Structures are given as C-alpha cells and as structure tokens.
Image (cartoon, rainbow, N blue to C red; front, side, top):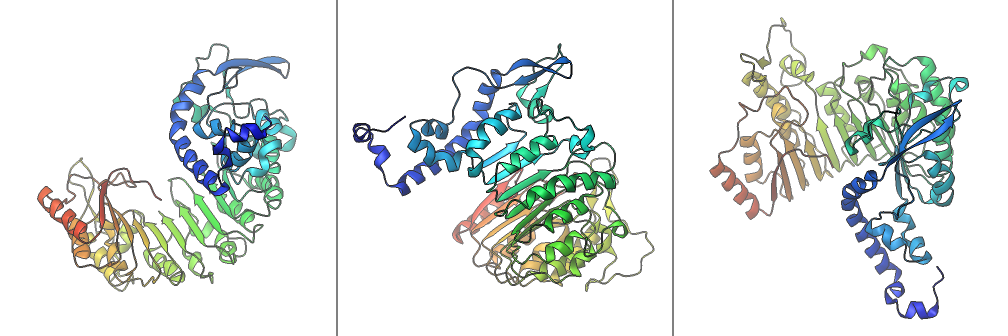
Length: 501
C-alpha cells in the first residue's frame, strides 16, 4: 500500500515521532503476548489434515495453514496498516522465533517464505533437534516435509491443543541448517539436544558437532548460548564445551539438564576439553546459569575465572559440594548482582559430617538425616537443620553489589545467614522459608535496602519434603509481619508456584 500525502493528513497517528510510535508498539507487543493462548485455540481449530506423496506413498499430517482470513494479534494487525508501519513493527514481530513453532506449519513455509524476507530481523532463535541429527548423513532424509507438523495415520483423531508440544515434529539437519543460515544477526541461540532412548555414543557427539559448529561460527553477533537436554545425555558436557570454545565473544551461557543420577566426576572431561575450562576463558562472560548439570564438580573451582559475572544461577549442582559452592560464588564476589541457588538432596549427608568450619568429620555412617516414621512424607530432623544453620553462619559471603537473591531451599540449609553482610539486597525470594529466621532478619533491618520479599510456601524443587510438619506463621503473626514490612517500605508477597526470574 502506497501512502499518499492526502492519506497521511487523515492519519495523524502515522505522523507521530518515531519514539512515540516505538513506545506504542512496545505496549502492543505486551498485549499480544497475553492474546497468544486464546488465539492459538482459534487457529488450531482450523487445522486440517492434508497429504503429500513421499517415497512412493501418500503420507498424512496436520497443518494450521489454510486459506481463511488470518487471525492476528494486536501487533500483527497494526503491522498490516501499511508498509511503513510493517517496517516499523518488523523488529518486534520477528525478534524471537521458536521451532517447533506453537502451531503445526510445514517448515518450508518458514525456510522458503518467511525467513528469506525477515530472517535478518531475528535476534533470538530456539530449536529442538530431532534424532535425525544423530544419524549418518547418508541415512538422513533430505525431505523436510514433516518438520514442524503433526504426522498422523489415516484413522488418526485430530490432536488437541495440549498435544501439540509433544507431537509436533522436531527439526532434521536440513531444516536446522536452512534456518540458522537465514538468521545471520542472531544474538541468542537456544539448542535442545535430541531425545534418544539409549545413551549417546561418541559418534553421536561428533555428528552434532559437525552440524552445529559450522553454523555457530557464522554468527558474529551471538552473545547468549542456551543448551537444554530433556534426556539423559552422558556426553552433554563435551557438546557444550565444543560449542563454547568456538564463541570467544559469548556473554551469557545457560545449561538446563534433567533429573537423574549424578555422573561420577572421574568420568568427566579434563582441561582443556572441559566446559568449566572453556567458560573460564571467556573474557566477556557476565551471565551463567547451570541447572541440573551433573558435570559440575570440584574442577570448577580450579580455574581462574573472570570477575565480570553479574548474574549467577546454580540449580541442583549435586556434584559440587557446599564448600565448593561457597568458594565458587566467592570468585565473582566483586561484581555479582543477581544470585539464585538451589543445593540438592545429595548435600544433606555432607552437612551431617562437617564441623562448623566446613571440614568433614569421621562418621560411622549411621546418622539419619531424615525422620521417616510414617508414610506421609520425609522430614528433616532437628540435628540436621541446626547443623546446616551453623554451617551457613560460619560461611558468610560479602557480595558488595548483590541486589537480587533467590534461595530455592533456604529453610533446610539456613543459607540466609550466609548473606547477612550483603547490605544492598533489594529483591529477596525464599522457598520453604524458616519463618522465625526470616522475621528476625527482616525486623532487625539486616538488609536496609530491601524493597521486595517473596516467600514461596511450597517446595518447588523437592517432592521429598512433606508440608505436614513445616512450621508456618499463625495468621495473627503473619498480619503483624506484613504490617512490619509495610512500615519498612517492603512489598511482601506470599506465593505458590514461583517461577524463577
């Protein structure tokens, strides 16, 4: 659509300063995010089963593509006003894409239609690799027909909206290459490793490296790398290390694993192949997130780390002892601003055999850290709780720039006591808090700058903790505590199902 002078006169909205238009678009983007779920329902209701001739036979799949009038979000509707508005909205419209996408659409629609036009606007990309990425190139089908669609036999019922995430087809190597090659300005890349029912083998790792390394080295603007593994991938450290070693300008790294038995550290990689070594050499690294990484152990404190890290998340690093965890955090003390911690159940035994200085003591192995006299849950005994609290009291951390702190298991470890000297904390979230301790610390103005206090009443990480015997505040005491927070200028929020920032 060509904008004429006359059209511009009757559309004063289009003549607003670019800064104002940008703020309007940014607001519409937030509205559009809230519209997504409802619109997905409407769009998927139109999904139809179609068929294509492949390898000598017709094969069926579901696709949300159709000839009906498109269902648009508020931001997409604004972009349709004219070409100038579409160009202005383009940054927001294509800033983030994810595969498999939220609705089943043949991948060729993206690689042959959308990305050739708008791929340069994509800044964040998330891809879920299919098991085909582990196969020999000679065995991988060159067809991308079913990628990002839902395959179905002739008598298949139409999947529900809840089925999409689990049934939509992941990407084969051809699709992965096409997508990344058409997004040269990526700043964030998230890779979900292929699911495989059997353990990874060295040849699997080699094929993944041969696929991904040539692609990431072609991304000069890449700043953040996220690696996710929903299956038990024994070689995931090697995969992550290989990729990190090729991105020296990386500023942020995240690894999200899955629950399982920790891998013995003796089987882990050694420098310079180890992930810890490669990360420690990144001069610009300022964010590090490690969740359920079985390869994180004492090696991680053997390197000299850059002191530019501002955001650190350590979630269930069960091969990292509490003493090593303490030392690891101290590496980044001068610059750390945001810290999230969840130590694991494996550390419970360690605490029982440490003295207050953190050194292990002799034990006959008969100490029981749990009281499990009934079937209603497993409760930590008083000896353990008191010992953990003493350990934390004697391991205080001085983090002069720390402003945000999240402790997913603050009560069992008394870890709050380790942060009493961090006087600039403004945002604090505790899961399973020790109500008596938190009330004492807050009322004594331990953190004079505190402005937000979130208390998660449920155990969000460990199903082994029963709530039956967890001490809670009486309603009158809660009211008094809330009033104390209000008078101190602290926003108090008691939450359930807290999501990490």
